[in-house]
Image (tube, rainbow, N blue to C red; front, side, top):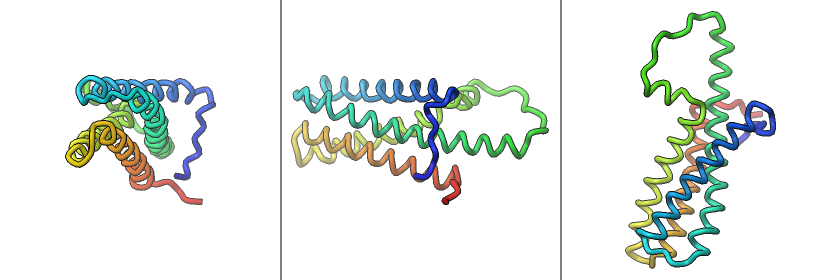
Length: 159
């Protein structure tokens, strides 16, 4: 993942904090589900494991965000003097917000893989181990998806 992430710069610090907060909210949602619906009783598993997973999905959203930002910068350089587009629908306005696409990609990928992995591993293991495996598989898959988005969509130049 060769992107140069400049998150301490003025323009990216606020976006980085927004991404971190939203990734924390995603994990808070899974803590709630794990605690009350899936019957996970261990506080260590429900609190400590999602903190690490939050960092992993935050890194994945940063990579996806930077890929989209790089493509946007490249398009802006190519089409500086074109006319701007007219009216956009509400869905297009929401998706054009910088952090919505990375968060949507990560949330959909993590949620689907979490529940698929949890219910498959629940057949063979108990709740706690199934939760740990599902969280880790979801986070690793999000990192792989972020790398694929970076390679395919961002077309990052390798040095």
